Image: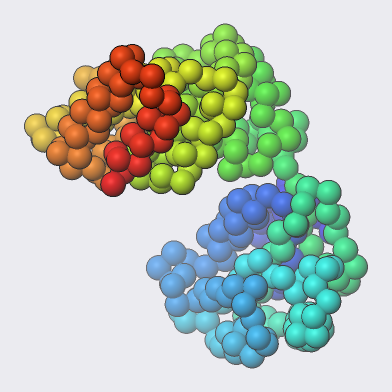
Length: 342
C-alpha cells in the first residue's frame, strides 16, 4: 500500500504497474492522480481510442470490463480501463451480486494482460472509514493507493502550484499561513478557498491580513458562494447559501449589496465584450486579475444584456422594498434570487 506522494514518485520514475486501486474520501484527489496516470501512459492523440471508463455503481457483471482489458491498444503500447466509484469494494455491500463481482474482479487482477492498465477507485462513505479487508486483499495483485488529504510540505507544494496555475504569486509566509487555515480540507474545498482569496484581493499582492480577515469573516465567503451560484443560475444552491447566511445573523441589505456588486461587474464586462475587447484589456480596465476576469466572462456569457439589466432592476425594487416596507427580508431575497434566474 502506498500514499499519493509515493504514487507520484513512481509515475515520475515511469514505474507503472498493471493495476491500481485508489481509496479514500477525497474523490477529486483520486481523479486528479488518475488523470496524471493517463497522461503518462497514453499519448494525447490516441486517448479517446485507448481509454475505457465504467461506472462501478451500475455494474451487473465484469464482461464489458474484461473485454475492454483484453482488447489490444490502438497505435500505442498501452490501453487503460478505469472503473469509477466501485461499490463492490464497499465492506457494507453484502449483496450477492456485489460479492460475485468482487470475487471475479479480484481473480481477474492476476490475469490483466501486459498491454492494459486497470484502475479502480472507491470513495469512503465517511471520514471515519478505513481500508477494509476487500481492498487490503487486492493489494496482493495490485497497487493500493490511499488518497488522504495533503499535509505539511505536500500541502504547501500543492497549494503553491494552484496559485501559480492562476498566475498569482504568493509569498512564502502568506503561503504557509494559508495552508494552516485550510489544513485538513479536501482538494476541491481548497481550490474554492483559493478562488475566494483571489477574488477578495482583486489581483493585488496577497497579505497575511487578507488571509486572516477572509477566514474570520465566514459570512463574506458565503456571500461569494451566493453571488457565484446566481451567476451560474443554480437557484437551489443559492437559496441554501441564503439560508446559511440568515442562520449566521447576516443582514439582508448586506447580502443584497453584494448581489448588486456582482451584477454591476457582469454588466461592465458585458459592455467590454460588446466593444470587442479581449480578456486582458477588460481585466486591465477593471483592475482585476486576468484569471478571475476569464471566470466572470464565462459567467457573463450565461446571461444576455436584457437579463442583466432586468436583474439590476429587480435588485433596485428589492432594495426599495427592504427600506420602505415591513415585508419579510428573507422572503424578498428568495423571490429576488428565483426571479433573476427565471
